[in-house]
Image 1 (spheres, rainbow, N blue to C red):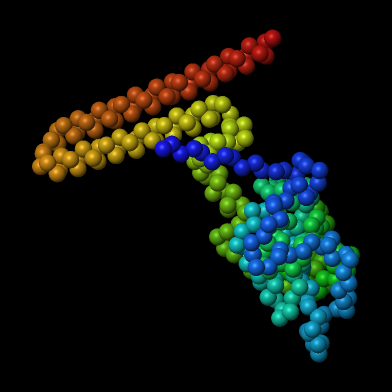
Image 2 (cartoon, rainbow, N blue to C red):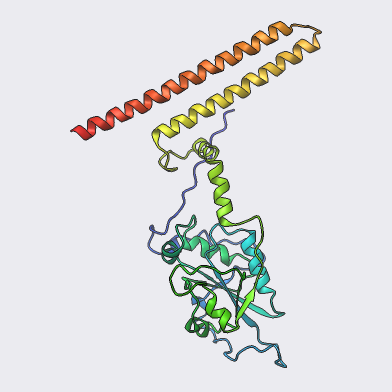
Length: 303
């Protein structure tokens, strides 16, 4: 029975729909606890106490309000571990997590893989997060600290270059006023590392998704590139098939007690010659396709 490819999943972007609610995944949750809340949803609740936290205070009933921020693109366990450290800085911690919007991230860092709505929603489902603050500022100011009654800001201690031009380090101000708490980075994992893994195996990922039903336009692949990948995939499959048959022939000959080493060598030579001719023909076909496309473009430009 032939196995039909699964239909491609449609990824919603920040440009479609009537609002951010259209961008979020279904609201069905399968965890024992509901996801964390949004900052906006707390506006009707009583404001948290504004008295500053003191380690020498006799009463530690009030939660220490710790703030962590970032872009959190392709949310991974390195992000989760940093948030876990922030949550465990004090015995009673209320962790607020700010996430920068698409607009400010594109301006100061670059394009993300996930939309802001997807990044916000990922944070809401992290067990360490008590509150998500969307559209967080690139640089933390005293006004922002006062607005959210922040006691400490948690981040790794490495200077984070301030692309906005406000200073040398995004956390320079927070460090200066003694409200900075250090967390440790997790080695071997980062958003950039994940993206590089995908880029490294680009052809494999493209072919896998073409086989699943995505079109070359969905994947941003040119006509020539698609044909080249399909030809290469065909050659790879053919090599595997030939190798499989060779192994079967060797097994049969060995089982029957036959010693046809000369015949086997000739067979190997024939197979190698066939593959060489096949690859040469595919290369010629690819060249012909490119030439036809170039000729068509020239004719269109001359009109």
